[in-house]
Length: 251
Length: 343
Image (cartoon, rainbow over all chains, first blue to last red; front, side):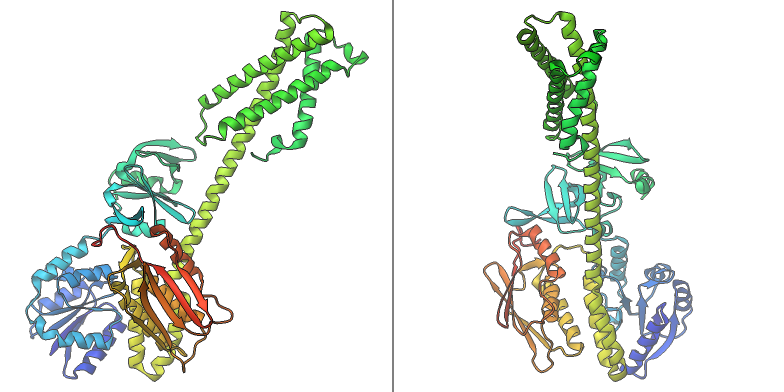
C-alpha cells in the first residue's frame, strides 16, 4: 500500500510512519510533504498509484485544504488535526475520517480498518468541510436564568456585556440585565468581532447598541448606549484606534 | 457619609468659630467700628456670629449630602444650582430671623434695612464658602471612591482571569501526567501513548473555547472517563466511576471533571483499595457518592468547586452541597432545568 504523509512536524511524521509500519510492515510511505507548496508539486507529478494520504490540516504555509483548491485529489484521505472539538464537528458532520493529534496507535489502527470504505474520493464532503472551516464558529446565543428555568438570549439581542469584579452582566437591547457564566476574556474569542468590540478590559458592546460617541478626557471615548446601564462605557486609550477601525468596518 | 476633613468633628467645631470671628470683623469694617475690637471684643454679637456660622455650616453639609447621595450621576453645573439656591434662601431666612430676634430681645428695637443687608451679605458669603468647600470635598471623595471601586473590580477581574487560566492549565495534573509519562516511556511505550492520548483528549476539552455553558451528562461523560483513565495511569490510584443517571440531564460544563478530580485529590490514595464513585440522581440533584478516608491536609471544598458553585449560582437557586458521615461522602449537584429541552 502506497501512502503519502502531508505533515509539517517531523516528530509527527516519524511517529505516524512508525505506527503505519507497526500496523502493516508492507506499507510504503512514498512521499512526505511539509508544506502546501511541496504537496501540490508532488501530488501533481505522481507517477505511481497512491492508496491513502494522511493530511495534517494546519501546515506551516496555510490550511491543507488549499491543496485541494489547487489540484484535484482522487485518493482517499485521512485528515490529522489538533483543532478543538468544534472544528472536529465539521469532519463528523461530513463523515470524513480524521485522527486527533497526538495520534495514538489504537486510533490509527481503527482508521486503517475503515480505510476500504474510503476508496471513493470524498470530494463533495471535503468541499463542505472546507466551507465549514472557513466559516469561523461564533457563539449565537447565551443561556440565562429566567425565573426557575434557563432560557436563551439570541446574540442579536445582546447590547452590552460588562464585568463588575467577578460578575459578568449581559444587557439586552430591551434593557434586561442578566448574569452570565463567562469571563470577558473568554468572550473575546467566541463573539463575532464584526459585531462585538471589547472597548476596555471589562466591557464589550454590540455595534447596534451604540447611540453616541463622545470625546472623553485623556484621549478616550465615551459611548452612550441605546440602552440605559449603570456603568460608564469608556473606550480605553489603547483601544481607541482599534475601536475607530472597527466602527469603520476595518475589523 | 464621607469621612473627609470637612466632616471631622474638630473641623466642624473650630471652623464656625473662625468664620464667625472673621464675619464679625467684617461687620465692624462695614460699620466702621473697628475700635470696638480694642474695648470689647468678646461680646454677645460675636457668639451670635459663631452660632449662625455653625448653623450655616451644618445646613450646607446636610443639603449637599441629602441631595447628592441619592443620585450618582456625573458632574453637571445644573445639578448644583438647585441646592445652591436652597442654601442661599435658607441662609437669608435664618440670618434675618436670628438678627431680628437678637435686636428685638437684646437691644429693644428692630434692625434697620441696611443692617439686615450687611448681615445677610456676610452670611451669604459664609454660605457660599461652605457650599463650595463641601461640594469640592464631596466630588473629590466621590471620584476617589469611584476610582477605588473600579480598581477593586479590576483586581477581581484579573484574579478571576488568572484562576480561570490556572484551572484550565491545571498545573498539578499536567506535571503529574508528565512525570508519569517520563516513567512510562521507559517501561511501556504503548501505555505511554495511550496516556498521552487521554491527556490530550481531556485538555482539548478543558481548554477549547467555551461555546456552550451547559451540556448534557452524556457529552461530558466521555471526557470524564478519559480523566479517570488518566488518574489510573498515575501512581497509587485506582478509581472506578459508574453512573445510573439519565444521559440527558443538564449540568454546567466541566462539572463532572471538576468534582471527580476534587474527590480523587481529597482522599488518601491507596493502590490496594479502589476508590469507587457512583453517580445517581435524586429529585433535582445529581449525586456523587464515595467511601474513602479524606486527606488530613486537604479539603474537598477547593477553589475549583467554589468557582463551579459560582457558575451554578448563575443558573440555579441551588448550590453544590457536600456532606460527610465518617468515611462516607456525598456531593449533591443541582440538575439544571432548561425552558426548552432542545437547547
